[in-house]
Image (cartoon, rainbow, N blue to C red; front, side, top):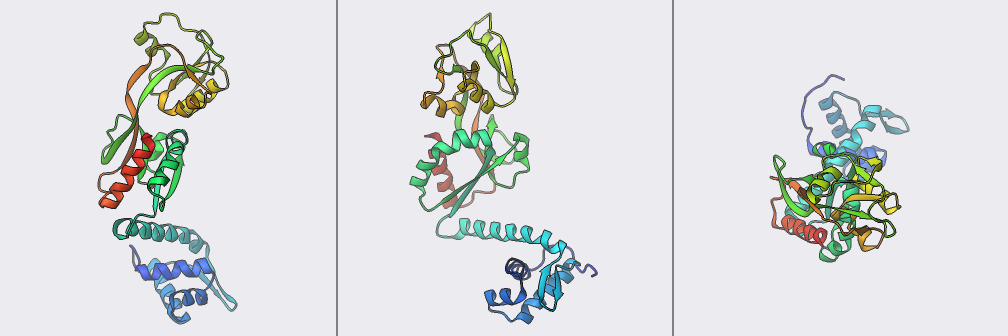
Length: 284
């Protein structure tokens, strides 16, 4: 089938294709839209001619998706769903869903504790989270509302501070200063930075080293030593009595945890109110 046109096909054709693919046939799609089977077949044929690809195999007993049709269907479904949700957010009576992306450790430590309060403020909104493996992955993440770690300056994005990063020596309740240190690699200040700030000359040895603050906190919780722990990320552990801050100086940093979104994304008062309530819940 020769390619006829490049670009976005008419929405009506895409909606009919999605229904036929989801329901497994032209007749079922015709019933959903109140069309004749011939009208559905015509729209599918128009879409195939537009794309220059065959999306369905026509057989005597019905139709089935081709490999290209199977690949195209979830893309169309996600796009139609996103269009529906965004239209509702902008023009509907009230937003029905809030979706936020972030590192798993940030979702666990910053979002999870605030969910009950957020649902009290917005009882009709469904909250969804998307976890990413690395901070660099956030730049390619489709979810527009994100939790990021840094100094609050990302090109093209607005940012609201959730909590400033403060690092404190902490350990399980039966572990005291002098126990082995848990080393934390990465962009945060480390034990040597803390020692210079606190005026400590001799540091205990470090027997383990992690590249994740979440893993470092978990190791301290299990009694492996003393961690220079993030106060915001360890708050749940300290409230539960699983970790205790030692009687040593804290190290305040220039970084923090931020709720961010594209500058041109939040256009309506309803969206802004939803984000404000979410921030209120996260800040506790």
